[in-house]
Image (tube, rainbow, N blue to C red; front, side):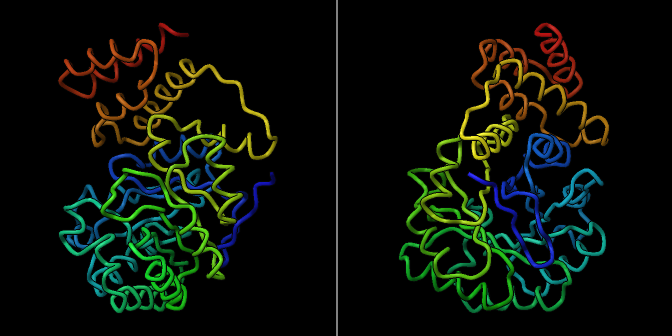
Length: 323
């Protein structure tokens, strides 16, 4: 299977594998690591438009990039058209991303409780207004990430509305917001959106290995795949999927050695970009060691440590033991 190029406005990618925006996960170091393994576009963590306009330092750091992190997208979350527009103009000027994405799919209670994320899908007029305002105000392509709704016709209505308002691509997660991450991604619903729209449609949800990636593309006909939770602590999933889609063969890897090596690379990248102290290294350590033979011992040791430097030193030593 050929990895198709994908066009979003004037942006043309070399392939169609996307790293999903994930809170607490897709910092610059992690994006660079996924890109090294074959991700074609990476997204920042979602950035709250209100916090960014309030000059919140943590929010500002989320948008930082580097020349090696291209093309990349910045994802904004908010419920106010005016604040989202103002934040997007700042993002375009300050970070110069290739894409600005609007989060209309997050199902987490603190986000939907504030009227953001998937809560916006209940208000089609507001959805249209937000997309229209941003596409009018920006030179950067605007995309939107949504979840499916309870009825297929409502999902299609929202998707068409987003396209008509000027968005140049849409990502569809095949679960309803109330499902969170339970159940299965509905490929039938994603396929229906793809058949209805003329802009690129990117499939998201349950893409966790070679077979699920191939099945999602073949069944939905989507233009791209967005990989989220399966990449946490496992950035080489992009290399595996890319290799499989291009050759039809599975890439032979020593998972234990690969994950420890990637964790070592991740820590090095955090250090190089002065991000070590700003990230939850304990959480990433759990993800990177998940499923490994020595994972329980490493995680038990990590749980007893009090600061990032101690975690850093433990992982370094664990990696050296495997060299």
